[in-house]
Image (tube, rainbow, N blue to C red; front, side, top):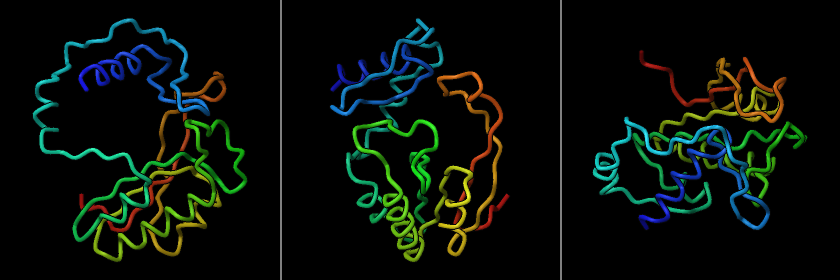
Length: 171
């Protein structure tokens, strides 16, 4: 287990922009980046280990995980930003494309969690079809962000995304 964690940290810190992506065979396929330092002064693996000591980490379909949320739980979701036409830039981060049908299935799971009393926060593409998908059940805000993970310079820079939520911010 320690060897897998060390390998993941090494790959994440030395690959291009910290991107995690796999090919159709499920193998990591991000090119090497420009950083060579793997361990940072700010790393505190003992503290992280202590925090994660009583945490259960699962590999599961998002719907199985969201279905576990109940009263007063906070569900934060940041899915691949696939839109209805499925041709918005690069979306193939793993061996299974997160499709428009998955977006619809995610919305249904989030509505069920909200109905059980969970608080929902979702980020997604600032695209009309995403706004239309969530407008009846959730509050939608447009948030500025800086896009830095793009293969081409013109794809980097100021951008916006949607923050979709089930409640008003308190603060």
